[in-house]
Image (cartoon, rainbow, N blue to C red; front, side):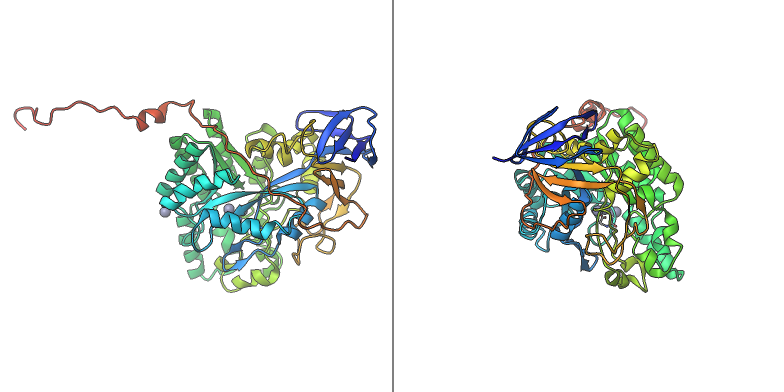
Length: 487
Ligand code: URP
Ligand code: ZN
Ligand code: ZN
Ligand code: ZN
């Protein structure tokens, strides 16, 4: 088996930074140390050697809002690799038959021939019946150990509280992780109607109809339901202080509740909906919407303190033509924005270069914490002997201006257009193969990626006793015939 040595770099993990070479044998990290020898060498002089990025939240080729996300499994995993991300976890939606098993098989059918690097899936639970109950076990057996619940998108994907409670309890039994899209979908629908009736039909109506209070309410509600079910909870695309505050409070109480801000939310604000032309704003329509600077500060603070753990993209790419579906009605603009290729460079520039995050915190938020929470650590997310050689030689001296003209997504625009970023992937390795080399005309290799099964993990929130009493209530003895005289 040929060996490769990543030579002369500074290994940077979630907890250490040190000079070392990394020896790779086949797909695996074989040794980390000084002056290592191998058949081939990869130059890491002047660069960090970090675990490949893991994006826990993408929507590739997802059928949604009457259309299908334009980013394919090939273009998405390729763009990811160019930006230093070596694994994505994509959201699998049930098809018309409602079957979970069929949906996962459909995702395999679409992704297997296309993916350039590794993938995992989350499964969406969009309703509740016996079949869903049974098939959740099949999903876990198929290596899908996390289930997303949409508290928004009324009339489409939205789930009711009783259904969510049933699903959370099932997650608890299976050792799976429930996730939520936290927005009060009933209130959003009311507000959408109200603003449309008032003649506000443009993208600004999207922002007005989804205030942070609606997100905070849903986050609190989901946390209460998870608490009652005794199960951990992962809140996707956290955009605001209200949701962050709910997560902080739950964690302080002792619950395993995780929060995922997006790179877009950290760096783009709500002014995007009130400037430029219709298309500029429509391209940035996503749910929840971008927020003001105070919310951004809250999210950065959460990453610093650890109350928020991971930075994702929610990459759901719809072309300008697709966005035009909502030209007369903001409710019909397909929701989603891009970031898969840009996540690491923008977080480095806006986080590490500004002093908000240490390089180790950057690695934790983009890779290691994701791997731990999703139960693929240390196969992924780590530079240790025996781990998959998903490694990025991260060069803090390559700067570039982000543009649609040079990105690898199929999208005809980029929400980060014009951002000047201060670091790039010099090399991206996926299980030992160099799949991207800066400035060397690398080409996508569809089909070389693999599905990574994620086993169940029995972490339950059982330390708190309050709900145990409710699930095993005591019968109070009363004699219905013993009625006091005079009544
Ligand atoms: O606007 C968004 N976030 N689109 C993708 C679907 C979702 O809600 O995650
Ligand atoms: Zn409802
Ligand atoms: Zn969502
Ligand atoms: Zn999403």
